[in-house]
Image (cartoon, rainbow, N blue to C red; front, side, top):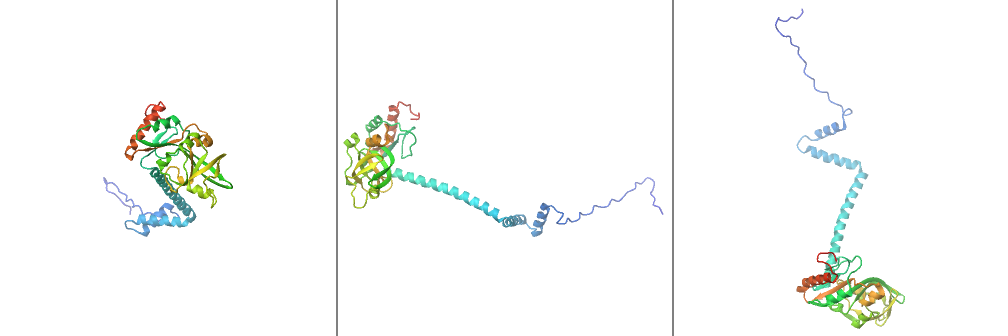
Length: 304
């Protein structure tokens, strides 16, 4: 029999409920779906996602061992480079501190390079602007008990068939007082030697041991520095490292001789002074700065 509906009533049609999606096979799933499915199946409690991520990362490392090794090597090299740079900077700072300590508590050093300043030991750049007039002016400052120009250079020194590369330092007789340099043998050059530019030399202990054969006394021997002949008149007592110039491995000559015979300069590279006490070092520094500004006719604050 056919179905019938009452007049005035609305017919209804039953819509079937949507069926659950069928499971996607691993072959049809995307890589992301496979990864999520694997993580869910491993562990369902809190923290499973992190654990699964770490495990997946470790599996990726093992699967690409060469690439992972190179990456780790790059990281290690980078860290080592940073540590090495910091260590080097620390070592340089310690070395400079040692030199400054070796100068003495009441020593003031004037760097004669452009932008000269009154400070501790520095590496100089450019040409000096200090003159003999500056040296004479500074020598008259109150609280200055000793003062010496300093002319430094490196040179190969020759004695017969022996040679030794060392530092040559041109100074005057006050350097003995300023740096407390003592003689082991011989004599120190005189002020007359300094005024006349005499070709005489006082050698450090290291130079004496390396330049002269065993059993040969350096005193009275003639050595060649570049193309100039010098006569050795003294040997400094060993002092060890520190101080300006490291006296053991150096040769001291009159500063006038260094300017004329070795460096061909008319300006003085550096001037080193001794204050009468450590309490007046700052005062001497300020007075020296003022004197140099006036000598060079520069206003305070302008690079000098």
